[in-house]
Amino acid sequence: MTGPVELRREIHRNPERSGLEAGTAKRLLRYFEPLRPDEIIHGLGGTGIAFIFSATEAGPTVLLRSELDALPIQEINEFEHRSLCDGTSHKCGHDGHMAILAAVGEKLSEKRPARGKVVLLYQPAEETGKGAAAVLADEKFVRIKPDFCFALHNLPGFPLGDIIVRNGTFSCASRGMAIRLTGKTAHAAQPETGVSPAKAMCQLITELSELPSAIDFGGELAFATVVGSRLGEQAFGTAPGEAEVWGTLRSETDETLARIVSHAEDRTRQLAADHGLKSAITYQDIFAASINSERAVEVIRLAAGDGPLSVAEQPFRWSEDFGCFASVSQCAMFGLGAGNALAELHNPDYDFPDELIPFGSDIFLGILKQTMEIQCS
Ligand SMILES: [Zn+2]
Ligand SMILES: [Zn+2]
Image (cartoon, rainbow, N blue to C red):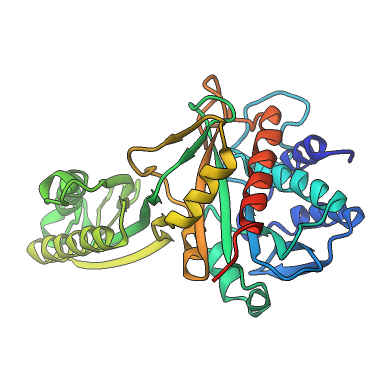
């Protein structure tokens, strides 16, 4: 490997899903060892790894985060660096984010920060919402004690290299809700002797879809998307006794999301009772809202200088687990325009544009310059 672009392509060829990124962490270790970081922390929150570059003079600790994981999506691109792993590929650009931090590492290897410490954190399992919490809960993280944490996400549909910031919520809180309705199967010739969840399931799908417009959320973003459902089996002699409905609930604040969740739970229980069914609800992919601190956003503004910077009018609808870092430091996430002609994130033809790497490393280096000059309270 000779540089960040080659690193990005090697990682793209060898994607690993959330929580299983041991090979990716090893590739990063091979890349960083010759850069002689002052400290390496292995196994953070599972497969996470951090490379630390320190000054001799005391000062702030600034953490820059990249994700490690790829997605369960089959790549349809045919280029030379396409995924070698069937059914898994880097469709969120985390391979590019990793390369950006590697480019920052190259610079820090040549020239250490003037004071303080820079922590380049590669975090596992962002896509499932579990990684940031696992890193923060890891006792090895305690010794990092960051004053500032920053992360970027590439944004297709915005001009290449544009910086997109926002005070307050940057990306929404969300959670996946799995509802199970249980009645009683019967012979299809005598459905009246069973308890079918079919009607309740259909009503629940309709109500969940209409939930955001049925309640006043004070103008906040609020969404409920039914992502799937299942009723009975393809067994033509059997009337169904079980159904599942899966939905993703989303809002710009954790408080409003809690209201949506509570409403969806109430309606599920009521519908189940009305139809003589049992109900059970489980949650997964739980993300808190990612809330930016004004001080950290100001650092990004100063770092962007005269370069193109815009303010997002609304929070982004997608979710990110970076928000967890707000519990330990001043933190901000920002968008980095990835170009107008690019496929959307999580689409099977998406590929992180290599020409974006220097834009990302430049803004991060600007952020380091700004924060190292700020005295921490
Ligand atoms: Zn993603
Ligand atoms: Zn992502």
